[in-house]
Image (cartoon, rainbow, N blue to C red; front, side, top):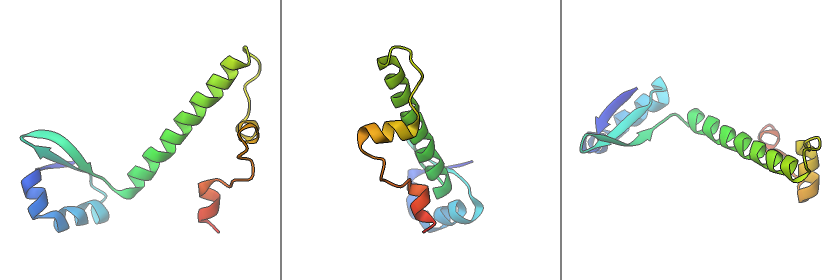
Length: 97
């Protein structure tokens, strides 16, 4: 992981972007010596998004389980059916088409 000032990042953005794209580096941008932003490879963003979705699904299933009084938790398919989302394809399924 590399860090740089916001001023230097602005002046050398093309080089910074190339490091992220081709070397898969994460670059931390600092302002007044404190980290304030990051430039990360797109695969890292996609991983974060998948984790957020899984975490949200887990919270929904837990809430439904609590609502059902400790009965067996509902499957993702059952939740989709209850929410009227059963005909929607997962994002990963549509990317391969």
